[in-house]
Length: 393
Image (tube, rainbow, N blue to C red; front, top):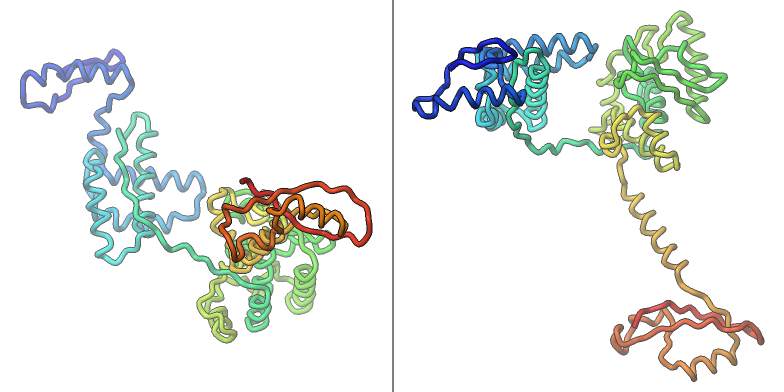
């Protein structure tokens, strides 16, 4: 068939075997051209490997740090879609890939991250001019149940901080009070002393250090500030030329899993992760009454959905909620001052009135009881106080 796209003739197969359907193909193609939905020949020629190079270039231009992780996903994606035209990547093939990966030992989260990588390559293909990808198929998703919910109570934090080696104490304190990420505290790009103002009590993170590429300012007080002052004093005495806040013998710390795991086992907190301190920091900010927008600014969260995952609810929070609810209900009870004479007159006129404390007790159905409230005048001696609650008959 032959049709025109922006004045240029296009020759393509109708991909039909019947003459009647083939005769209608040019008209349909011209309609797609008019609606901007026509797929160029590039879409039918593009292969999976061509999109990988576009993905790598996109990561380099945006300066993202997760490209090594993407390479791990691409290893398995290449096994499934290597030398395949993008047009042939359909939902059926994706479902086949998803059903095969668990047999290879992959978790649901790993499979979903690989699908995210593939989806990103297809999105970049649609943004190319001319487009390399036409229509993106539906991507299946697996349920993930790997959300960690660990956190530290204050006594657990103090016990663990006393058990860890000295080069971990400062990092622990920073994470506990600020909810900073581990990569923002330690490592070659970690926190430096020129970013800390002890007189002002502030920490200033630059954009290159943060995961969200946005600078942050965090203030210190009380125990946190005292720990940082002591760390600065020891650093000036032993390693005056070391620029890193968290260091070991004057060199930046890159990892301390061995010392961390040994200390956790020693104090009975085996299995806890350093990242649990970040969840604890977020939780403490909210429990202290800090507005959520301010807490997100301190911890560096950009999305509310991720922030809610870090705002862990404990059993103590549930008990406090029950206590607050009980106090609120007690405040709703109405108290009226009456004298002894007024009380006898009230009971004679309204024998059906019952105190709140007797509602639901023995003798009669709750629905048959009617409780009314009256505002009685003050006066007389020896006032009596009865509590009544309004109940709809």
